[in-house]
Length: 406
Length: 130
Image 1 (cartoon, each protein chain N blue to C red):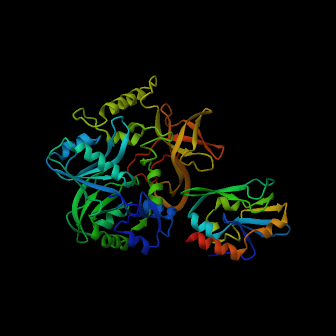
Image 2: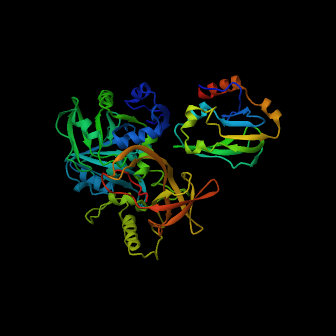
Image 3: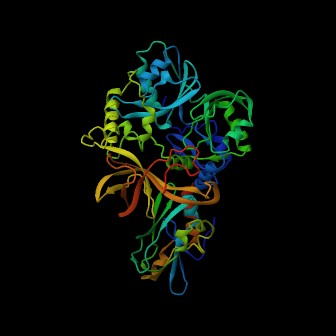
């Protein structure tokens, strides 16, 4: 089944025609950037609309009478309680409370779910789900990754672009994570108001693989800018969204990172006591630790010694994955993702101007006691740069995304 | 691809040119800048710093990565182009002109002749690119 030949999405030819720079990503030949470059692609997404080929990600269909029950057992979130026409963030957990992968679950029909997983973890996830399926008799697990393509359209103009192309059905309700099945330029599509950019106006669109090229061309013709994996990474980092292998999975020392070390993962873990699921006991311990931390009780940090925080680098310079972090002179952790990201400057009315600048941001895995406001240092090439732990900006529709900068 | 016929080159894509006056001027090639993509940060040495041939004189960072820059000839830094770190975009337009990086007083002028000339460098990056 496994071959070492790089794989291509149904949109590969489109990327070549657009003169994208192609790189190997998790065994896929993917566009890292188009001629506009990472900075302009990032800015285009924030100001108008960016179009991403995300067909390299894995798409599994889970159907049958027990689909909901199976997913409840296999995933951390409450799949059975996911309303029809909605989607949510979820995690495939290990027994020890670490993550096999993080994923997005869509419920387009009542016993018909689609789970979107990371390209780099797809084979591992498939095996994991197959092994858990044994105890459920009425579940069908299918790999649709090849037959169903997927693109993301993200940014303030994306809704207007799609509205003009609807030929049947409707866009999802205007609330985050809503889904719908509709017809776009004559093609049957599955919509989710989801994405990996932090944009308030965001869509992911699944379409039959042989229709993906036509849809791609139409969306570009309507003004969307093609965006490569380079800007996809700066956009998600600016929005402080985790990436498996950085903020989830194994840490720099090769140890399992507890799922709830990542604040975003809190949204993926069901509050409900209703269900049994893989990793529940370990995750309950992590939840209890978070409750203690909230009250300022750090007397027992064995379950959750470190957590992911957002950093703003105050001094000139760029923190990168692996840069050590210090607090009051002692080592407290390490940067998991970091780069310089562009942003549009805002006027007094919080409207985007024509001017942009760069800012140096990072995510880091540091001692659990460190929270927003703490001043730390990040070591880059032997020099210690001043940095500050900042809050994630969760204001929907805020003009300046994500990392709060004041 | 732009190239400066008067300059000499390192396989790591730095160029060095004689002048102005007795100084030597050092920068990064158009090919390297294109490969890096958007440049977002540049770290250059202090004036007065002495460096041996092949030592790291600075760092250039794109969105994706940080790369060291190596000095093609040993010597003392006599001038640093502070405009470039403030506006790295200028490297795309004038990598051999206004976007020079440092000037040095070299210790061994003979090192110049040991470096790749423009024709050799052109061949070198064409091979590297394929």
